[in-house]
Image (spheres, rainbow, N blue to C red):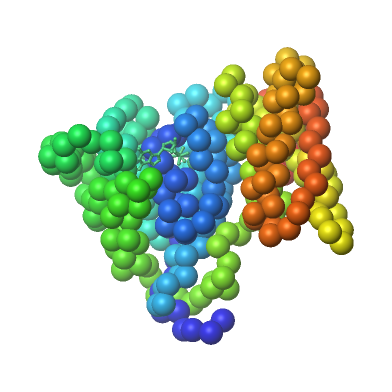
Length: 297
Ligand code: GDP
Ligand code: MG
């Protein structure tokens, strides 16, 4: 640690699924620390993104979405994480989509009501607005709903106005020391990142509703002289899902493997040999013990 940090703290990024929380985190960090996709519920566990500035260290917490349905163990888990994150954070960023306000947004807003800490409203996806004048009535409506510390329109996709957002966040942080080395961008280990890359490719490759019940476990990680050997198991709930992932003559699994390997090689800066298996573990989303055995504490 070479420099004196004057401010540091935790910043929770909350909002309903699909508003662009993970995209924003990656944009603020400048690296892909959280996977994104057009399907809701891509982010399942809490991910820290760390940004070290000259005089501040911002530790972002990307949260899974909050849901009305709490039927299954996975949903209960996600809701617990999302609520506790509001209590733990120093600053809260509430992300909404400039093009649509829904009942789910209202639910998240409700959770904020007792949060006695600064809340920044981020209106994302302004690149989708044909006329920026549409923002004014939205801003007024949001002002009436809550006493936000700031209201900042951005496009996470185009990194539009995100630097301004970062400055305002840094201004709101409490005084504090540097908590992580300045070159560290996430709290997650390399195995976790590899598993997430595979899961992302899997989500993109399967049009069916798979991701929610699918998890990836890294079974083998061996550094050889010329390449790193990685073995991963894709756990699914049903035989039918296994067949979908594998595809005709294994074509889909092969494609997932190639795409994942390329990105893992970039992450590790090394040649990689990746082996993927698909295994069935029945009803694991309904079973807290099974969740724990897969590392979702
Ligand atoms: P999360 O569920 O809130 O984490 O949302 P994601 O970050 O996974 O993003 C959901 C979808 O919205 C993805 O398809 C993103 O590419 C897209 N998206 C995110 N930010 C923007 C933005 O600023 N503009 C546009 N047009 N799309 C965005
Ligand atoms: Mg996400």
